Length: 271
Image (cartoon, rainbow, N blue to C red; front, side, top):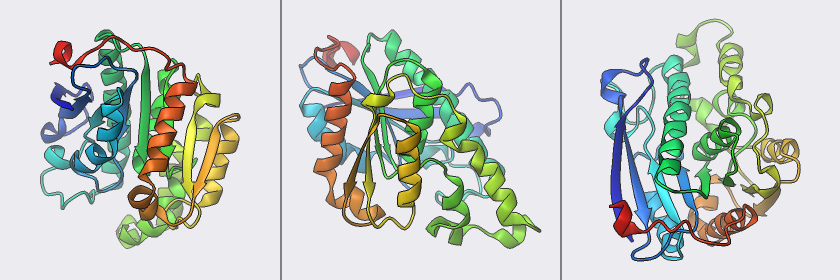
C-alpha cells in the first residue's frame, strides 16, 4: 500500500488560522489500477488516520483507494485552547460540519480532476453523517457506504451518550431545545437525495446507545431503495468486531455503483 500525504488551504474563511490547513492521507494499491476511490471520514474522537487505515488497508490491497480526511479542530487542526476533540462552543461544532462539507467537496472535485472517475464516500458514526451529507451535496454518482449513522445528529447531542459531555448550564435557558434546533439543521431529510440512493449500503448496530436504531431506520426509509444491514452489538463493537461486514458493505456499494472496471490511476502516477 502506498501512502500519499495531501494538504491544501481551506476555502472557508470563517475557520481560525490554526485550522485552515487541510490534511488528508491517500492510500493507494501498489502497482495496480484503482477501481473506486473513497473519501473516508472519521468518527467522533478519531484524531489521526490509523484506525481508518487498519480498516481500509485490506480493501486497498484489493484495488480500492481511500482518502482519509482530517476534520477542522481535529489533530493538527485543533483550535488553540481546545482540550482534545472536545469543542469549546456550539458555533465551533456548527463550523466543523460546515467546513467539512465545503472542504470535502473541494477534495472530491480535485480527485475527479486527477482522473478518479469512480468516487465514493464512507464513514462511521459522525463520519457516516459527514459522508451522507456530502453525497447529498455532490449530486453526482457516488458509491455510498455508511456505518452507525442515523438521519439526524440532533438526538445524539441532546439525549444520547454524547449529551453527557455538553455543559447545558452554560448554554442558558431552554438550552437543550436550542441546541437541538441548531444541530437539527443537519437532518438529512432536509437535503436532496443522493444520485444513486438505491446503491447506498448502510450497516447499523442492534444495541447502539449513541445512534438509535429508529434513526438508522429513518435514514434508510428516507433514502428509498437503499440497503440496510444489521449487526449484533453496540456502537463501538460495530467498528471493532464487525470489520469484515463493513468491508463487505464497501465492496457492495462500489459494485452497485458500477465498479466493474478500473480508473487506470496507479500509485506510481499519483505520487
